[in-house]
Amino acid sequence: MKQYKFILSGGGTGGHIYPAIAIANELKSRFPDAEFLFVGAQDKMEMQKVPQAGYKIKGLWISGIQRRLTFDNSLFPLKLLASLLKSRTIIREFEPDAVIGTGGFASGPLLQVAAMAGIPTVIQEQNSYPGITNKWLSKKANKICVAYENLERFFPKKKLILTGNPVRQDLIDIESKRAEAIPFFNLDAKKKTLLVLGGSLGARRVNQLIEKELKNLLSQNVQVIWQCGKLYFEDYKKYSQGDVQVMAFIERMDLVYAAADIVISRAGASSVSELCLVGKPVIFIPSPNVAEDHQTKNAQAIVDRKGAIMLKETELDSQFGLVFEALLKDQGKQNQLIENIKKLAKPEATKQIVDEIVKLI
Image (cartoon, rainbow, N blue to C red):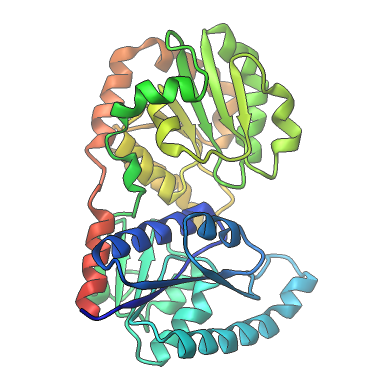
């Protein structure tokens, strides 16, 4: 049997990194002798997270264009040229059978060079509104695996395959892990657990909300696991005591989901896909600071099917306390949300994406 070689590229945020790792893990399970290489941006979080998952990674000198005039922006043409040249060297030396991009700026130069060299390329787009890199790459890619319908307006229709987003396989059947999760996080089994997720870097407005509402939450006999993000940990770690655990990052997402009774989350594509799979009552607080407000669209797709609650940032001060208390007291509503969000899960997404990669090689 041929020993296959795969290059994967995705980074900048967990939303691009973890789908790439999930795809690599599925490829590895099918081709145990395969060789893998990740390519990321040299100063981004993938340079730590990918080696932790057991894969080699090389970094490109690349970053996005800022919306305002900065020194970094003036360097962009130079960075792009340097990244294209390094990508060409990486591909020539590694000789991959396929190259897979999950978004983020590093995947741009790499997939562009791979496509020009005639190597099969696959894009995985997580969001309901595609990022600039994937839109640019779509003309050259062989296949585009997407998580939402109606993306023909951004991508060539004949290349589109609706698969859903790759999620970590350890999130399947998390209810069986609840008995392990409660002592792992030193929780009181008699209290409801609120899990707050602001994304891998953190969410300023969500953190401000939890800080403001913390006394109120605790007065309702709730214990809180608050992932505030690495950018904000120094500001909020002082609240970590008693029934509150403040964390920059949570390694065991399978256990924290198993322990959670209610989740407050941003609506990045990977988070939405994970929450559909784990089936918890969710209050989405979409970030308004993303391209085309795609987090609101991600959340709305779940809300339209009565699978979650959504509060916009502008509604938090007036609505959050009432909405949370009503949900906490209404077990019937919680059960309804759980049932409906689970119907939207696509647990086979990773396998379907890898099926498409295998057809190309």
